Image 1 (cartoon, rainbow, N blue to C red):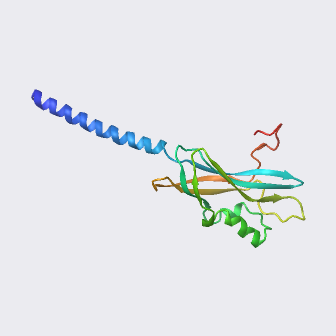
Image 2 (spheres, rainbow, N blue to C red):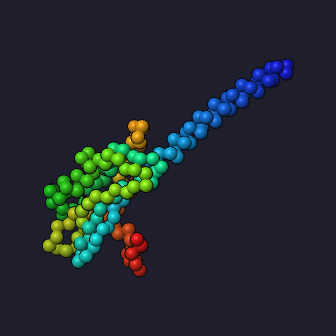
Image 3 (spheres, rainbow, N blue to C red):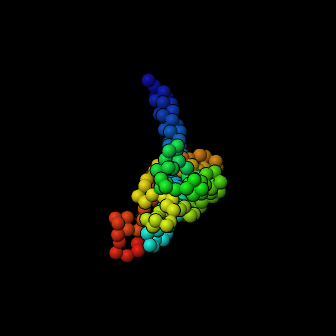
Length: 172
């Protein structure tokens, strides 16, 4: 192998390394500069055996998310619902996870919250959610360029402040 052949080979290897480096840098940028969403159920108020809950969706990523929707696979939603719930109340709860509840935009660093329902130990109050129940939810969304993402996570009906069953003070 001549000196010119060796120089050509090294030039081709350097060019190939540059191309691989560009592809890897772009891939890493795409993975780290994107919306990252999580959903959770928050107890907003409790008293006299009734706990009120909100559904919150947070964007902890570095870019805005569009067309955000929290939904369930068949049979998962029912895990959160009290077995004694009326059909009307069940339909109202299901609306929180329907296409009509799609969130058009969540900015990076933003959390959006909407009313969900209540859990009750009071006989005169119709229960909606089962306290302590957990189900697997999916969050579907896109970034500003239209790239689609979907993540799976658990949703649990419980008090986030005092998740051990009690708390010395409000953690907020």
